[in-house]
Length: 245
Image (cartoon, rainbow, N blue to C red; front, side, top):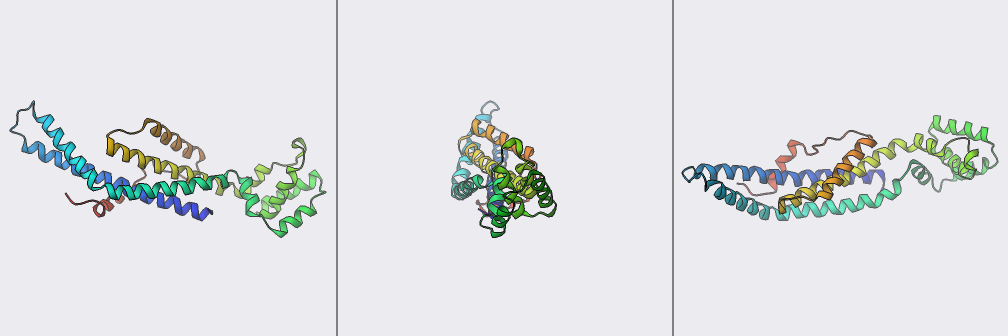
């Protein structure tokens, strides 16, 4: 997946996750209204019997709504899982700025020529060329230099290939790294809410994974994220997904 492909997949995950949440929000709203109606209709019932009757009525209405929205939710969760697998398969190609830099210039004739030209260059010349590559944003020169210093003993390397690659690809690497973590978190959140809606309880291990992914997003810090990812406006999509009360 190209960076654009990753961004597109993450956007689709976000949209589907919000649509899934909107369905469940709408279900809860309808259950809440039903509960109020039942409580008002049972005012004349003995106070000690009323709670259990209300609870049964609410439970039945919730189960009914969950069944009615099952198809729409299943379509969304299946698509989320598919997109999740696609993004996960791409993570191996974006492990480090060095990897991204070397792949980006793979097959470049200019890079090959530069590597031949600097094959006998000393430490001072290599360091100077690295500064020039960083200043000009020359990825082919930077990739050739990273390849050259990789052949030198660690203690004799005049510059850090990782630092040079970070100048070239670091910003994009951090953006994509956070996007991939975000994609995983959003899918897990949807699956957690789906399980809670269907069974009444979530998965503690999954809840821990979600918390760790949120923390990882904040650590990367390529761009901000809202803990409450679904905008209130997204809830309006629910009217297209489930029947009216």
